[in-house]
Image 1 (cartoon, rainbow, N blue to C red):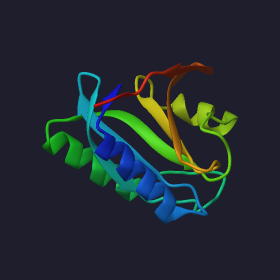
Image 2: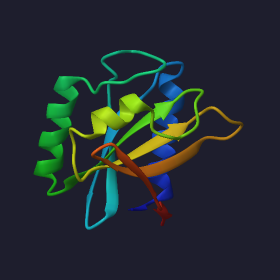
Image 3: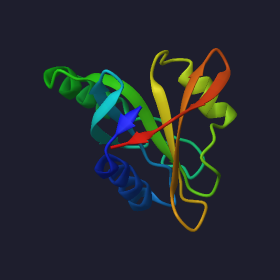
Length: 131
């Protein structure tokens, strides 16, 4: 996935703003290139799990369609854990085939973001190409 540093910075900013709870949101774009980040509310308000608030999901989906973009990825944060999908993340990802999943970890000295393709219980890390 190709993504601008400014969009990665927005994800990190969102993760820091929501700590100690996990943040979540959607990345839109097209042809494997991210063009916008859309913050969502974590309906669970939890430091270890997230669920995108249904009204936010609808609002963001509508906005993405209006802008002529596609949903290309979901993102969320891990407040203390490394940027690797948990079993809960893997199970949830099966609901969204074709979408990538970015995880921003705040667990180290500096934030780290990793991207994954997840499907049928399989997890494959993918390269983030920062533009």
